[in-house]
Every structure is written in C-alpha cells, then in structure tokens.
Amino acid sequence: MPGATVEETGREVTNMCGIVGYTGPREAGPVLMDGLRRLEYRGYDSAGIALVTENGDLFVEKRAGKVAVLQDALGADTPRAGVGLGHTRWATHGRPSDLNAHPHSDCTGRISVVHNGIVENFRELRDELAAKGHVLASETDTEVVAHLVEDAYRGDLADAVRAALRRLEGAYALVVMHRDEPDRLVGARLNAPLLVGLGDGESFLASDASALVAYTKRVIFLADGDVADLRPGTATITDIAGKPVDRPIDVIPWSAEAAEKGGYAHFMLKEIHEQPAALRSAMAGRVRGDNVCIEEIDALRDRFINVSRVELIACGTAYYASLVGAQLFQDWLGVPARANVASEFRYSPPPLDARTLVVAVTQSGETADTIAAARLARERGSMVIAVTNTVGSAITREAHASVFLQAGPEVAVAATKTFVTQVVTLVMLAADIAQQLGRRTKAEEDELVRALRALPEAAERAIELAAVTEEMASRYAEAAGFMYIGRAFGYPAALEGALKIKEISYLHAEGYAAGELKHGPISLLDADVPLVAVATRSPVYDKLISNLMEGKARDARVLAVATEGDKQIEQLATDVCWVPDTLDPLSTILAVIPLQLFAYYVAVARGRDVDQPRNLAKSVTVE
Ligand code: F6R
Image (cartoon, rainbow, N blue to C red):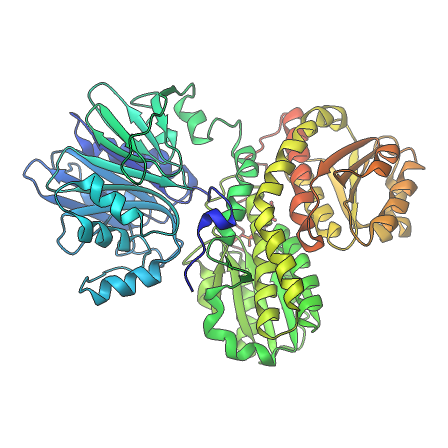
C-alpha cells in the first residue's frame, strides 16, 4: 500500500534533526562545525559534514555520538572548502551509528544529502533503486534521496533535486550538493522547517535559526514545496515544478540564545507549542488510508492472538500516559490491562507468562526501574514492546519490538510533547492490535482514524485557547497548593497537570480520581487551595460536575478545563480553560495542554527555573 502523505495526517512534523549548509568565501568546515555545535543543544546521537574541497573532491566525515566526537575525528583542520553541509541526527530509522549518520552519498560518491523528516515510501523506493542496481549502504530513509538525485542528474543539480522530490512521500527538509557544481547548494522543504540565510557574498541553509544567527540575521523562511537554489550571496526559489516563487526576506530579531528556543522564553514553552507537530510526527506513516498500522510490531503479529493480559510499566509522566493505554487495551482488546509504576513492579509482579503482553513506556528509554521491570517480564517469557522516544536506548535492547514516539528531542526537564505522543502512540498501538484481532468494528475504527487526523489541528486550537492561562496564573500563583481532579480519561490529565505544577513551581498539588475527593482530600480545600477540574465532555461529565460543586461549596476557587460550547460550566467554575471536542480516548491529550501552560505560567510568575527545576534530572538512570 502506498504510504499516506503527511498532507493526509496534517502539516509540519517536529524538527528532529539539525541541518546546516554553507556556500561562500569563508572556510566552510569551521562554519558548519560551529552551526552543528549550536544545534546540538537538543541532544543528538550522531553528526557529520560533507565538503567539496578546493581540489574538487567530496570529503565526508560522520560519527555516532556528539559533535565533539566528530570534531575529534576531524582533528584541528578540515580540508579547505567553500561549500558544504552538515547534520546532527536524532534517529528515527536505523540506530545511531557512523554508517547511519548523515550526510549520505549516491553510488558515484559525487552527491551528498542531509535530511530532516520521514520519507514514508522509502521501502518502496529502496527496493526500486536496488532493482536498478543502486547499492544502498545504510538503514536510513534518507539515503534513497541521494540515489534518486543520482538517477535524475543531467548536469543541473536543482533540476535533479526537483525530479527526486516528485517521488517522495512524507516530510522533508533537505540540503543537497554535487561535487561537480562546487559553489551550489540546493535545499527543499515539505512539512519540516528549513530557512535560507543571506550574508554578504555568502549563503546558508539551516533547519533552525540558531545555526546561522551568528553570521546573518537576513533570512527567508521557506514554504512547503519550495526548492532553494543557493550560490554565494544569492538564493533562487522555485516550486517543485521549477516555477520561480517570490519569498520575502525577513530580519530575525533573536540573539543566538533566543534562537535556540525558537524565540520562546523557555524550552518548555517551545515544546508545548511543538505538540501539534509532534503529534503529526508520531502519526506519520501510521495513520494510513482508513486504518492504523504500526509496522514496528509486524514481527510479533502472530503472537497477539494468545495475549490474555496487558501490563504497562512506566514512571512519572510516562506512567500517567500508560493509564490511558491501560483503559484502551482493556476496552478494545477485551482482556484485563493495568498500568504499573515500574519501581513497584518487581516487588509485587503480576503473573507473567507467554500470554502476557508487557508495554514499557519511557521517553528516554534509560529509566532504570522501567528497564529492570521489562527485563523481569522478558525473563518470565512475556512479550515486551517498548514505547520510547529514543532510538538505540537501553529499553530497545530489552524489548521484542520498539515503537518510537518520533516526537523529536525534548530539552526541558518537565515532559510535555512526549506525554501527548506517548498517549497517541498507545492509542495507535491498542487500536492496531485490536483491529488485527477483529475486536473492533469498522465503524469504530473509522471514527478513531477521523479523530486522529483532526487531532494536530485540535491541539493547535487548544494552545490558542489556552492563551488565557497566563493571566489566570497571575491570580493563582500565590495559592497554598492545588487539588486536581478527573475521571476516566480526565484522571490521567489531572495527575499530569498536578505533576507539572509540582515539578516546576514547587507548589504542592494532588492529582485525584474525582470520586475519591470526599474520601479524604476534600478537607484540604479552602479559599487558598483551588480545585482544578478536568471536566471535558464525556460519559462521566455529570459526575465530575457534582465533584466540582463539592469543591465550590468549600470556598475553593474552581478552575475547570471544559469542552468548547459547554454553557453549564461557565456558571459553575471561577475560571474556564476551553479545549476543542474530540473522541473520548484522545481527550487526555487536549485537556493536558492548558494544564501544562497553566503550570508553566505559575512557575514563571513565581520566578522558578522552568527548564531545569531543582532536584530533577531529565532521565533517572538509578533505581
Ligand atoms: C515529568 C517527567 C518524569 C518522567 C519520568 C520517566 O515531567 O519527565 O516524570 O516522565 O522520569 O522518564 P522516562 O519517560 O524517560 O522513562
């Protein structure tokens, strides 16, 4: 089946790799290495550069590991060259290795390509190229682009790139150069960011302004479908057919430091805003036609028929995402399913056998407790699927199959975009297995696919609607603490909202199943302890409203997260954050967005170190 285009699943994917290109009078090597160091802040797993040297050779050096490893391999001097391209990779296809690092070359070693994005039809293209005699060296989707350009090359690089692009489905920001055209760079963008920098007699391409603001602030933000043909100091932009298009030159007002954060004050805020793109990336190639298909689990498909129980294991935010997963595995597969805190799992493990499916959810893939729990399950014969953001991480070695979040690197300690992509990936995983086992109707499946396709735009709308949280936070920032409540799919959102407040504002917050409120914690509520209620449209809405009223009756201010158009809640709550309507299992994703932003603005109002809160590490590698 041909891969769905990203157009079908949405628009921009998340910026997963860092790209830089240069043509001009400076030494290209140091300019590229400087750009790569500036892109490295997000944490990459391999890096590489290619140069057309003054002798006319194509020089390539690429290494797994950090940019410093590449620098060591290069030594003090790079070959003299006025044109080149560089890349820091954040793996989506193929584990981090020297071979899989970019740039990638064609068979003749004349063409060099770097890429950010996902070529969804790369398997078909790879087979087609191999049948024509091309030899592909790596496991990456990107390498097919170099060979497609090679096939189409008739002496004009831009023409060849445009011809290759017409074959690609998916998302790309690409930079291509050819040994025989030594001052030329060709860039192209579709659903992944790429900008041109114009200096005095020199030109740049970069995925992220931070790589070029040290040299120039005059930039052209390329639009989807643009192909940029660069020579020193000039850029000609066309569409994929070669028709010239006009793009304005903008001046970036950011410093290099602000550019890393895309102009946002903190990485956390940037990553909250990246969530629509991260959701698109997570679904790219998986929501296809009218069904959901996760290829990474193909090798396990024969075994799903025997699954009699599902155990999810995770810590922190990933555990809250797993609570959504557990509800869905249970509902859709019709077998018992449970989310487990990984650090407790080993002390009281459930019966684990070959009929148990264990899903280990971990952004970093390095959380010690989650790894230990997965190992125990595997030793006892269970099938282990990892859901992680990190290709090549430790959890992928424990698991029988790994499903990647494709969310792009997350820099802020407080998880945001990886929470929503964990939830959507678990939704897709449960739906795929249930569909294979014939446990869901076609109508249910169609309804889910429609809701998934609409989700990135709904997340964009939720972010817009949550603009009110900044003003609200100024009124709630002096609270003594918070009580968050939710039911069913609102419950994990409440837990995650409370965790965000605790982590970054250092205020106490409880996340509770709303029905438990009157079994104890209600005594905490008063005028200084507001109630935050996840009250989106759902089958448990009326019950949640009763709990909200209980809080109101104790003089607590009530901040509700509610579905747009809900007239009743406006009368009941002190403040309302609206979110768009969606299918119930996806409601956690939209409900958490205003809660993330509320926590962010409360922390800012309290003067906290939002991106690196005290006492916390991004990944917890000790038990
Ligand atoms: C909270 C947060 C942590 C992590 C937890 C698990 O914002 O980030 O609670 O979710 O430490 O980490 P991973 O997902 O890397 O296993």
